[in-house]
Length: 477
Image 1 (tube, one colour):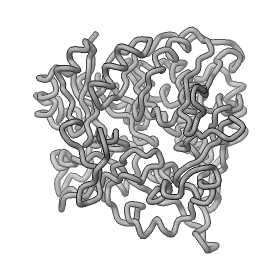
Image 2: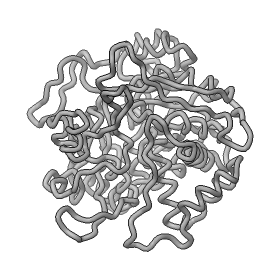
Image 3: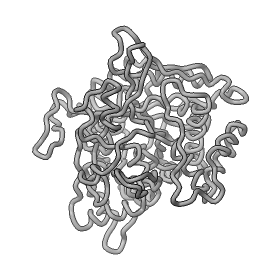
């Protein structure tokens, strides 16, 4: 098989848009959409009136139009909602989602993949986060119905994903263990999904997608290849300088003078050991130059995964003003990227780009009323009766403590769900803390530590660039 040299990273929420993935895939590399909160993105596009009509075009291709019509009846607003009206809510996804919630997950993932694959025959992948377990099963089935070519899973240990893919390929019930805080010893809680009966007729996906887990160590790569109980088709090796969530340092976490987690020799990856596993692999984390691509291939990799440079390209879902602000910073100074050890409610270090008037400024976040109304990054915990409850370290601290959490776990946390929606211009409207003033949620931009490639693609007269220009630059030799 001819593998791509470039994998465009699957950045959420909707930064790795279908437009970006389609552009990359149509040029022979692997474009990837993000599954993270894509159900929320879809219903907000519909509430804005789907002005370009692309969402309804994708929905028209879904194999069960009765399911689609129920979604349109609930969320579509002809001409779009009034500008001062908040977005309508949708159910949060827990361990026992309703059938309609599963259908929403399935349809939204189908639509994103279908749009990314429209008009070309290149490969398209989809990225899931193991830390966000509850939407994976129904979402993966929807992506497979759209013919997704590669499933990529990071932010955790996705050891059960191969068996899930195999089960969905046969249109059979699937499940996997959910991580539960405080679970009784010996008790396993599972998330399950049954594709049978969810549509007017049962559909077996046309093909099995490849599976590429994202790992950060030889140990985890070896576990995935040897113990997953299914096929691992390739590996993406992500180093600490990558954007978004990073794997914590191995051993006891220590902070540098700036308050960032320190990574050391134990976190370095032995590429010879990775190569010895006999699987194709790609390197990620500050590889956005032709020289780094050549270095990766010399180490035995098929190529590299790039996220940050694509995040600021014309086709990404990031708001245009945030792209422009970052590109201008790069042209005049060195932007500050802070690896925040506590911002994310997941507990993973999270890379935050410093941009004025965003939640990267600590004094701004103090004025936000803490609540959890989207719930993608909630954690499961076991109640006294053995059932599961859900809590978020970024929600109101008193609420979190009432659910059995510890107050110190809430310190410094930020609501990534709402801020990442604001990054794509779909921030919720809500009352300001202690006031009747209505304001929109503020963004919080994440990216990798190395932004230097932006200056290779822009100058004083040229302040934007396309995904095609990124590929031309990377593959110029």
